[in-house]
Amino acid sequence: MSRRHKALLVPILALPLAGFTPAGAESASHGSRIEVDYRTVHQKIDGFGSSQAFRRMELIEQLSPQQQREILDLWLSKEKGAGVSILRLGIGSSPTGSPYDLMESIQPVDPGGPDATPNYVWDGKDGGQVWLAKEAKRYGVKRFYADAWSAPGYMKDNGSDSNGGSLCGLTGVTCASGDWRTAYAKYLVQYAKFYKQEGIKITDIGFTNEPDWTAVYASMRFTPAQAAEMVRVMGPYARQAGLNLVCCDSFGWNESKAYTAAIEADPVARRYVDVHAGHTYASPVDAPLPTNRPVWMSEWNPNGDTWNEAWDDGSGWDGFTIASAIHDAMTLGNASAYVYWFGASRGATRALLQVDVPNQTYAVSKRLWALAAYSRFIRPDAVRLGITASDPALRVSAFRNKDGSEVVEILNTGTAAVSTTLKTKSGKATLYLTDGGNSLAPTVLPGKHGHRPVTLQPRSLTTIVVR
Image 1 (cartoon, rainbow, N blue to C red):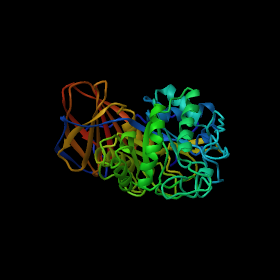
Image 2 (image 1 turned 45 degrees about the vertical axis):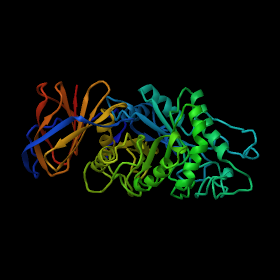
Image 3 (image 1 turned 90 degrees about the vertical axis):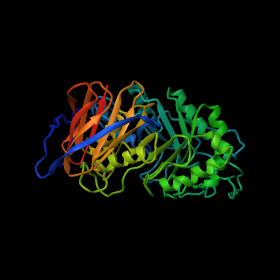
Image 4 (image 1 turned 120 degrees about the vertical axis):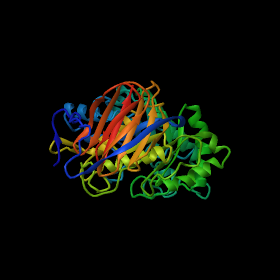
């Protein structure tokens, strides 16, 4: 049953019962052991995030002030919601009438050629993204990633921001209007400057989104070699502006490897890319990208044709699916960040929230709580630690925050409850259960020693925080 919200929504606080096996589940297994390996330190964590690009924030702006605050809390609060630490912004291009419109470009009209004096414009709103960024900053977000789906149409060989096309001046792309590569780089830096005047420091910037996918909405193609070429042009401007350069947000994780490899093989380009990023639509995370730089899973939500709030229904767009995908990104891909696609949208969306403007309501999916189980507790500058579990049904990961607190994430993929012993550092430990009936439901574990008996519910995500 859909849960619609017109009042403050907080996590369900039904407590997990140690040793309790739900009716219909298999008997609990015993003798299992989970142990954090402090000798093994993996990647540094930059954070977890989401986006409200393509004017999705305008939906939120049509709700009541109380509902707006509730939704912001669900996204951004470390006490009431996910506490995300990265906001991904869409750099605008001219609308096409599609439901995937971005806002107007900051230079919608050709200034007269790539060498002409730019005539930038700024509305101070950017499709609601400025307001969201300011709110995110108030909640403590410090990482703002601005990414462009396309250059303005007059900079491209197809004359449109939509339907693919390529940037004029790249190798193999000749246009009568000239070479727009440098003008495009300056255009992107100017976008960051406009945010700076609004009090928001853009920390990371990208010149391409899914360069290997042609969409009917804003899109632009780069081959891996052309992406490395554009990095050589864009890199010095980004560095001078104090921006981390991100590339290349490919359509799939396996496809991203070719872009990363091309940049790493270029002695100039590899100096300028600070973060290598990929999506997981065409292929999931199965291994690290071929670089020593930080890597981000920078966009994904599952495909589907219906709104779904379930935790574990086998649909492929339930909460358990999202928790599994985050686990894989962190452990198989050594990802430093995981950025979900939409925080909220409308209709048959797989966003974290669904907004119904005509009825002035919103609904919350278990996808949000799957993300929150990681994002609320694993903070920027944490590191991933080694960890082992003797039970193959348990998928585990461990993290140490900068303040010394430890976070252990345990996905019980089996249909039986598991009685296990968890070995961590000594300290106060709190267990947070996420499953069909619970959304980060807290229980303080007894004792302060480092060996703790824990019962893991079937098909659940258990987050244990030790301070």
